[in-house]
Image (cartoon, rainbow, N blue to C red; front, top):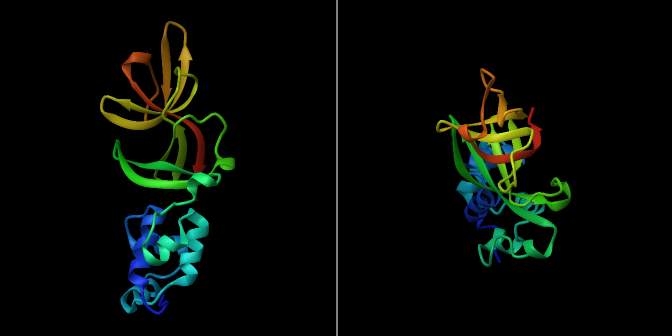
Length: 188
């Protein structure tokens, strides 16, 4: 194995392992300048320090990161690491956005089918499976627009919907409940 070459492929695999779509996002994650990454990419020099960091942070296989052989997460089922789908909430729509790797110990108890929702500077961990609508924060679809809202049940089979520009009362059947938010992380 020649570690003087293979930088381009390794960098592209790191972008994939983190679930990013751009090398700029990788620069931000690794805390390196765009020019530093571009230099290694153009010279095809192998970024061993970044590969190790990526493997530790994502759980991706070192073999896959360095050579592209094998599977990205060959040992994920043997550890306490889980792969959770990630979605981005932009302009009232949800978009698939790869995945995050989490240690099970950091996830809230009782999650049946977790999903990560990115909404600006806030990251939510939510559950796609729920038995009934209860008080709390939800990802909802109101007339084709997806948003996060605080929901409270009120008498008469109604719910109070708060958040956004205005609060309102409606029947539970008037809106679609997509995910129950269980954890909110504010990025500053």
